[in-house]
Length: 215
DNA sequence: TCAATTTGACCCAA
DNA sequence: TTGGGTCAAATTGA
Image 1 (cartoon, rainbow, N blue to C red):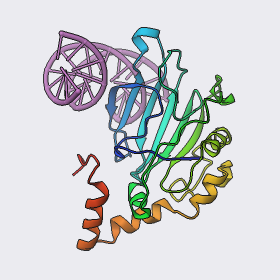
Image 2 (cartoon, protein in one colour):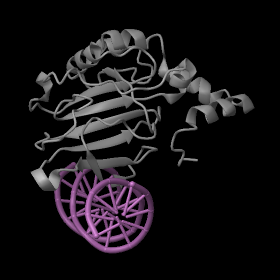
Image 3 (cartoon, protein in one colour):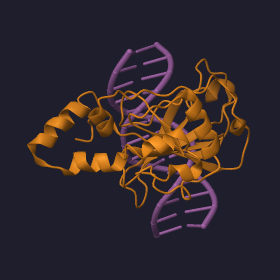
Image 4 (cartoon, chains in turn yellow, green, red):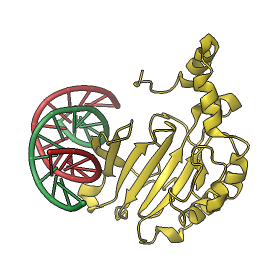
């Protein structure tokens, strides 16, 4: 269970440092949001078989479940911003609303000094929940540590994905601790459910720089 | 012009 | 038969 932050289009999951090419999108039964399929851009050059699936959660549009399949065999010029297991399901939470409320920009936390994480070795499929939040301090060290520990838990066994209150169960460390102070889902609910003209002006400000295709 | 994205069709396993 | 995953032609944008 990891918290991370990023800037840019919050309609999409964050850049993890690799370059991905979308090759498909499917409506998934029982899910409000379609699932997108990506493969490594360098597949053709290096035969890199890395893939990932990205799907927004029904109950929290700012949470993405990202499932990584395969290892990157390509030589990318960029450094992975998120060090993830070779095969993992990652829940990525972003809450631009809360970030706006807190008056802080979302900044993608960098990986910890290219420290080769043990979990990048080939491992059996596992799930890692990464929370991309919102305003709490996220140091590279805490991110890397959280990733490593989070790799031992699955999304199914990591409840409170939206509230992030129980992220400590997966060893979220500082991220989980701080997350308690910024309940993403609650803030989002307030923003979306408060209604009235006041909220709309807030939302306009929040999403002014975001892709609003959904509207 | 080329690379990335979109999207309908196809394949295959359950 | 259905749903998930992939393919590939068309479209879009730099």
